[in-house]
Length: 617
Image 1: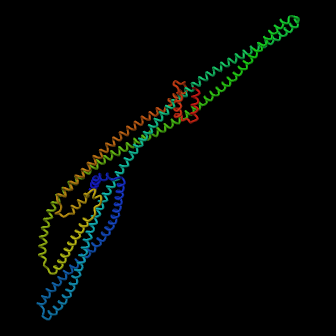
Image 2: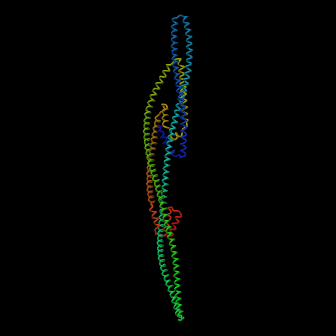
Image 3: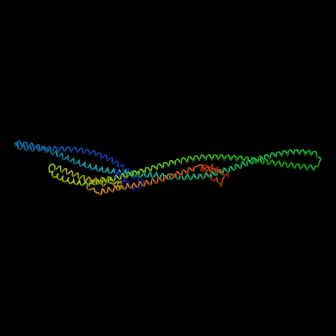
């Protein structure tokens, strides 16, 4: 009965509790907890008082039992004294008849004195019995008051227990709702985390795509720059070879010219000697012919000197060109070695960054797989828990339905028994009233009349006091303030049943039973509504699990795509494009930002790449 009442109490105010905000709900729960604590303290105090009153009650019962035993003994003594007095009276009569007048007078006087003393004793004993009876009446009244207070305290304790059960059910319902809110909050947090992970994944994919595109562009630019540099190196090597060949040819020409110069100088010396010899031999020849030949010889000498000067000038020019070409070749070889070294450094740094990125992607993949496994485990646990809750709700609803059906059958049987009992009690009351009338007519003794009247008076006073106390208790119970749970959830079923059983025989009607049956039917409807709500919640949770599984599969596919994008082949293609000759104008300039993002180059390295691209161009 308590479980069904608590379930009905928890089911009826669902809309009102749902209408409350979270702070109001927490305050309400705190108030209920405080009330429950105070009720527990009051229950403990009432239990202590009830134990003390029960101890006093047992003591008073023992005293009452002792007094009743004493009264019974004294009544037996009074009956024995009455029998003795009657025997003495009869013996006096007999002695009056048999004995003489003097003797009879003396005996009568003695008997009268004895009777007077016996009467005094009997009067004193009757007064003591009356006092004891009054004390017993007071004790009975006190015991009746004590029993009423005990009944009232038991009712209050029942009401407090009912309030405690209702508060406990409310607390359980609120805790369940708080747990549901927490579960929904965790689900929302997980959804938000999944959305954030999805956004981060999309951002990372976009950044990766951008970095990959930039690195591709930079690789193409590097490939083109390297191709141009290789072409320049080849051209420079060819130029160096041609210059070397020219140098060799110039050296050979110089040697030939030197030989010619030596030959001419020898010829000149020989010619001069011959001329001098001829002049010496032909001093006497014509001066004109000699002068003409001398002029011709001087002209030839001048021409030979000019040719010698031209050859020396050309030799000096060729020597300067050779020095400049060798310096240019040295600078080009230094630049080529620098470029080779820079390219090796860039490739090594790129390899290191690629390894770091690979480790980061592997760690991120492991974390994502662990998170997915945790989410799958949580989803499975939630589904298992929800299925268990559904099964528990179904079993509790079936049990409550069976219990309610049994209670309805019990109430029907109790109604039939109550009707039978009422008829039997009416018959017994009629018989008892007839017997009481006959007994009162038979009791006509003068000694018993005062006692009976006092007893009747005491019983009437007890009845009047009981009626007053009952009225006061009813008024107090009517005046008691109803709690918030009773206003929200309605009266408990156990209170109604106890009120019906505590009512008089004439006040139990079929309407009360019908009201109880309708309440039980209403409880069944609430249980059915709870079962429907649990089924709907289970269906919604199944849909949410399906959505979460689809989301997890989609995340795994996206992760596979990310791993596919993280392949280093793309970077290799960008580097090869950068090294290869340009197919489009300013292709290496477009590849430089891709390489900077993929390789995480600093400003100096970016400037160096741009300089290399410009030099290749």
